[in-house]
Length: 459
Image (cartoon, rainbow, N blue to C red; front, side, top):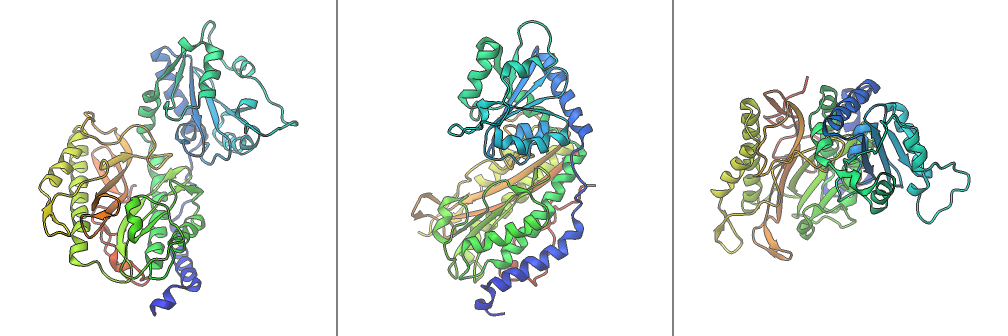
């Protein structure tokens, strides 16, 4: 098929149809978090609260910071307004919501067994909802099973996300001295996953592999970045993804200076390097794939050098993760292995020198009801604890080929490999099947590929 024929709506439609047809039988839509599992989560949180002397816990949420209340009450797909949640030391939690978004949240809490109250404080600030029956925080608190006397409130959400209005509401109700930030309490509990959570994450990564395979096939000269992103997003929706962990990334040519920029209507030119990434939210949990490719031609040896260095870093980090799991080692040993690899790395610059490229961020982070905003579990030089017994993580290794925008150091501005992995006891496996080197799949729907050697189904 000619390059011109590849850059058509008909070709993109063929890509979507074939990949969805091949993948759909692998999707198990019955995999969801049950009401029993939500109740078990509440018991774990309530036991931790009681042990620390708290009688109430509070979490906030929005379309950006949805992890805490998603995990506690099944609110995976919030709309419009911010919202909150109170969990007493006994009994089910109460979600606090505005008039419009609250109608959506009612559907979610019906599945988890949480309760919901509509409060005027959570409505959009410049609207009027004259037919909505709002209750006060006094009313909500009176309906909770709480011990007599002053209440001590643990704020589970990070202060980065908690709106001032919600903090003041808590302080006015319970006294500022009784409102205590205790983010790590919930973060540590969420970090440890159930088998069901690992199974759902596997489904999310089946979806993401299919979506990214479609994006690779659609990545041809003359296509717009949004054309390619649209193929991936259409496939994800067809396979049951509710929303995205982040805006779909397609950055071509000079746009690689953005590192994680969303797709725009820029036309991809022949020979440009392109970084792409996609993250579906499937039944509340996230998958991920990111890679750097070249459209219309294979990377030159000079361009390929940075990409191969990232692939080498990936192998080092995965194998260090496997070792840490098998031997119950502190997670900073994974960071140390990656840094040791980079210390010995020298690549040729555009000026002909050989220097060490720099990594833009840590190599491994926690995931779950967000792609990367779980607040705990990223691997850094300072994480001196072992991984939890059962976790889902994302390996995100990258190198940048510049220090200042518009001033390239290496022929490739940014190279990345990101995907998801699971750990259960001493075992570690990569969810994703796509190979590290996906270049043969660019603009090619027919190409066969060897499965990632670290891929293992979670059973």
